[in-house]
Length: 620
Image: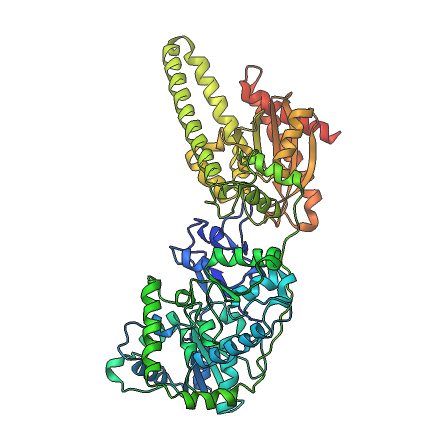
């Protein structure tokens, strides 16, 4: 397998639009609650490249193989470039394919061969399976993302994958038979997943490096190679025959001379992400009714692979492929091809597959329903807008419960929260305006009292902000009444951004800021009037907090003091002692606040007195 990950997300470029998360068909890009950026789980990845295609900021990138290829060319070994048939659809800017072949040679390759000959070989191998049907229907194994999708998410279908090498690996065998077993092989093609597939074999089917067409163009630009300065050069033998039609999905059947009509055809061909997912599902569930072999591709034909240039038009590329094939076949030496086919078809093109089940454990129905409540989708199960990337709200809720998604991926939930924040901000501004007007009306009568209250309030807020521990006070609806900077910093970047709009997170919904187990502790204290003291809480996957949650007004207001046990000032071996010291220190500070306020303190004083009483209870 690969030493370096196939797909990575560049943090500095990521705009957290979640497009990659929504596009991934197997949820290999994880996004947890309170997790700032998506993370690629490479063992779940099938190499389809959908995430790369949808990333507008170009933050999602695939493994660059240019340096690896240049090192092979400089190694002193013979190096062969094997070109995928879809190359004719990619390089529409090259006037003659023979110039294109010479451009590849100019990079330093000793040989340049067509993978279309490998297609001819494996297509006839598949035709043999179709013709010698023995009761088991097969799925072609030419598309790497399809193969990995079955191995990881439908391992029960492994024995239905046709046990034949893909055209890339088959051509590698041909090249080594022709030029020697030590020949290095570089595949040039449209598929990102081929970079994984290339490393699966360590015999003569191995491929030493894989360049996408985009990477090949970059190499041409780096070495200033263009067709205007070069002469013609043809591919090295053996030439491909109808395998040049392979980029068009039905081309495999053409190359293998397999019947391909609706009445007599024994093979169903389909292409595209959703069609692939549905095809595998229906093959798994209904093959005894369908009674056909399946020829499946993840992309809209190899002409539209993620390693091709952006902006390519499918049917323009399809036309380029068929025109190229027609031109080559006009004066094609069929006898020479038949001789080569007979020679190389004696090679062993068999292969096997390995189950690598990456399916996640199913969450309980209770967990799913809890998430549905959070996103206000209690009645949704079999429907949804699908803008989150899941086919239903229920599927999204299940993914959240499994820890690979978060509620914010629901557009309606996210918009509703933003609207609530806006309403809360407007309401706060309106209330402030009313309060200011009332103050102006009563200023002459209560100026001294107002001044004292203002000073007391500022003193309380200032002292509260001095606390190293996070402090938060919420009402019966889990809306924040007040919080300090330490609490906001514990929550992370999302909370800090909200704090810039709504200082102190006033009126923010605690349920949108904390994971389900954490905010449910607040609900428990509100409902049961039973304090939770000195409770350790795992937060954000790797964080550990110590929380004390207590009643301020029965069933109305609760407060909490939260301490980050992994903060720099707290050493792991001293966590218990430090928590005790911090509680005592905070208690002394709160008592000082009570002393400053005196008997005529405001509602905020009463809240802090309740905090003091809770700490006294814990010390007893």
